[in-house]
Length: 623
Image (spheres, rainbow, N blue to C red):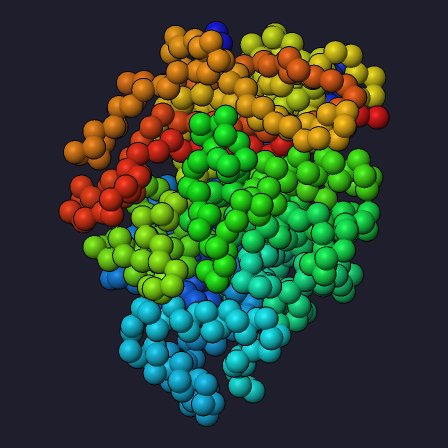
């Protein structure tokens, strides 16, 4: 059905001021002001938790040489910087926060090699790598990257920093502290653990709540220390015990994990147990579900009745491009089946190991957190604007992939009380976050047993959502509940972007036999469309001018809202719900390049898509 409310954007802006979840309503005789003595997530903050700079081995190798963490922070704050290709680059709007997450493996090594540092050139391997850098031949770069990746398997780095070289980790931490401006811009300390056993992606991003005074007390745990996530979690626990600080880990690119990211077996092949489930849920509250190397929400093979499941699908190879993907891998690589599997494991083990929220981030290796379709700077140097973008990603004949498969995605949206390390980190831990493929839509999602239509129509719907339910990332218990849960949803278009097509609730559940199921419900949509006999909503239309790379907001809605009750609810069945918000069709970066740069594109290149948001889920747990 179409939402009858039509709340104006000014009204929806008031949704940023809710109370703590399920608080009692204030007594007006004592607490006249609803805002006094409360701490609210007042605003949604936008950022990137996964950006690489010249300090990373791979980013530097492929040509990002003069853009270190300082430049990355300046760009994220809205300043103009010079990209690796010599062009000026700037965001249309600043970000609110950034995590520079350079790889722990070979951290700071490549800048010394590129500069032919005498201390490094005493090593024969360093001299060989330096010759490859001087040749500037993409295929040689690609093969060197594979050689470097293979060294993770051996547990021994091919190169280490010479004695006496200042710590690049501490330098990165100082840069983050210098860029951090509480209340204005948040610069998190972080890094990437790049484990890839058998060439399968198990990478995690570490995000620290702390400054350099604590982070400097440790050396980043790398794939050379271990490629087992359980060992990483132990390192995180040791960090917190040693420093009194806080840290979390964010997996990414589950779509390239060879079926290992959400396996029901440990890395050494043992069934998961309660201790494993408890530690994974503790240390990994989030999943990076969309980024340049593909979308990890759903796969069309697993969701054949979902016409929007095939977005940014990368399913040719694993991360090392040394193994082709097989259908049996896919249930263990995507967020939607993982959330369902988590329900089953939660019943078996008493703890759900896959109870994660969802964010997007770029994984850009250009030091530029830029994923607007008309302002996309690619994965790495050489993928920046220019005619070479349509060539292969790695330039390796055995594993060719067109650069046009790169997804200009994504960003992390965080509902928090303030733009500070502490407030943003705490929001991430409670999973009050959502992912977008780039657009800055404002999205709210609440679940509860007693939500009513008047809660949605009042002047502060989000306030009612917090008082009477739980926000995205929360959990509903059956204790004292009657009937089916109700969900309150709000979506406001990016003020500088496209109108909205529809809002959907994706549900996963376990039946009485423990079998996993999913369903996608259209809960609010634009226009006067009606579902057909199969329950399918007709397409919103298409206003894209393919000759000029333009679109018109003559279709779609600026705002969509709904109060939805699960029509298929069974109180005995564990369930998980999340929101997917779809924009109207808009040009991809490939169409912008075709029109603006006159480039030739490979046959079959996708030119138009529907960008989207994915919220963190709300879980229902039977007693």
